[in-house]
Length: 434
Image (cartoon, rainbow, N blue to C red; front, side):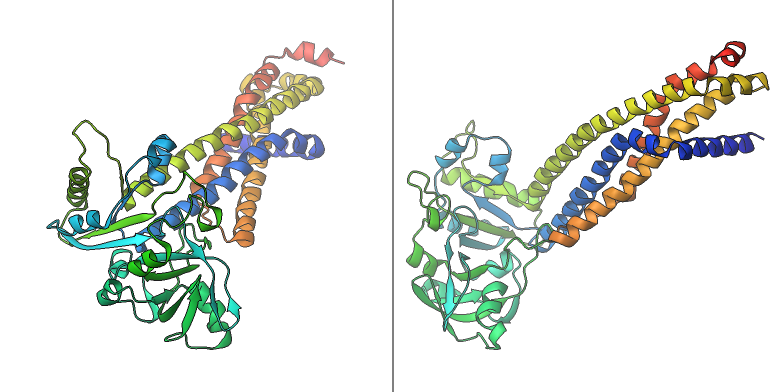
């Protein structure tokens, strides 16, 4: 009996909303906007999170990076001028880290962080766009998990002798050779003002975020050849094309790969202790370098994504609040317009609870319909952005549940007062209402 009454109440609510379709649509516009924001942005944030985690897992999950400063320091709010006063990392720092018992391999790289060194590569009249030039050691493929598509990587002897050899990323390979069907191995390309012999081509590199962020726009050369051509300073803070006196910083980074049996936390402590001793830091002094791991990057991203999600909820709540006020206003008008109907129903035996349920159901159905539209629009928005830009996408079921739950709750909350007012109407006074 109760189930049949509820079904009848829902049917009556749908009929009422259908009769006032335009008014109902305008009423739930705020709810639609709020739910669309929740579902749409959540799908993109979750997609980026999933893609980033997968990419980092492939980019050397056990590698420890030591840098003069990084996004970790910037994200923690450290004063930028203070970061610029940090001492440069040196080759001797890397050699000291190599002597740690638990360390398997150490790589020195230039151009991996700010400032980027950019030059065009050319071959027989073809020229690329500006590419990132990276100088590394023979350990780079092991420490940073770089795979080769063809050819080989340079040897320790080539690094020690500053040989002009290069491993091309996919972008210069495609532009200079693949499009013309030429085998790049052994060919000489000009990078900036120096010629390099191509000995290998790297495989497509994992893309954090799932979209092309220029990760294949690189030329990798021995770090000794890099320093010979570009010096220890890869250019101004904004790169070689944007020199800025006073903002010159060294772009050297050290990668440390612990042995398989060594705990990552233990290796990090050893690396940090060694660097502090080399830099002569007292116990009460903070580090003048950054130690970066996969977990640290993911923790920082989690903080950013959580802050983004909370901000989204606040913004969406404003839209839902506006929608809720609209629902309350339209339900108050509906109660006034249907005063005689309420009086007739009560005169025929309808109880307060049944009238209250009817109007609450109307409000919940109204906002639930808006929530359903918002879910569809939010998912469509995420898919459209993904198709247009390649931005990673994830559509978790709980984002749909949150959207529908919020919209229904708004209807129940803001429809409560009009429903209680309708339920309390005196049937005799209601029947007299004109």
